[in-house]
Length: 162
Image 1 (tube, rainbow, N blue to C red):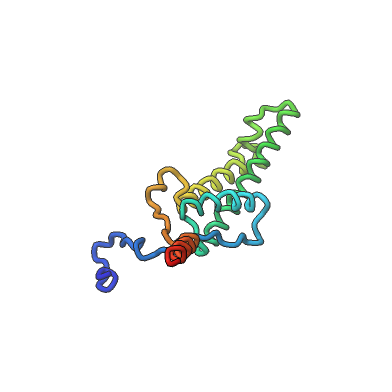
Image 2 (image 1 turned 90 degrees about the vertical axis):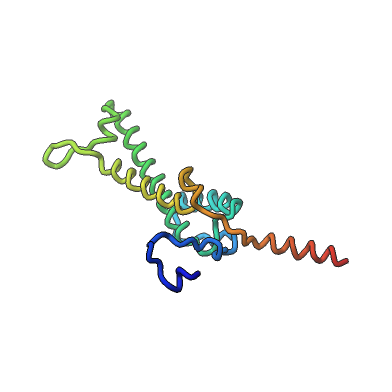
């Protein structure tokens, strides 16, 4: 607390995790999410709630992650469709999927492959925000503020008083 008042001359990160305990609750699903993004929202919020890593504050971050995931799924499906199309045409599947011809006739990396790579990087970054990657799991701290725990405590106190 003193560092907050005097400043932080060492510029090291200040640990504020002891004082921040948002209520563990799954936020409402945003209406703008795509079908795949909604599926990911329903899948991942259950897991995050179990381990105490989700609150209403996380709605925007979760929406961004889920929408990025949905776009990644769409891009992967487009890549697979392109591969199947090359297979049916008897073309080299790897060349059709991983490269594309420029208007001047040169071969370059497929735009779809670049898009997928960028979406994968973005997803990885968002996963780390919620401790959903092996390396980031040790850096996040779950909230101990669970509404159901408060209800159970109140119920137990009521039974003890009888």
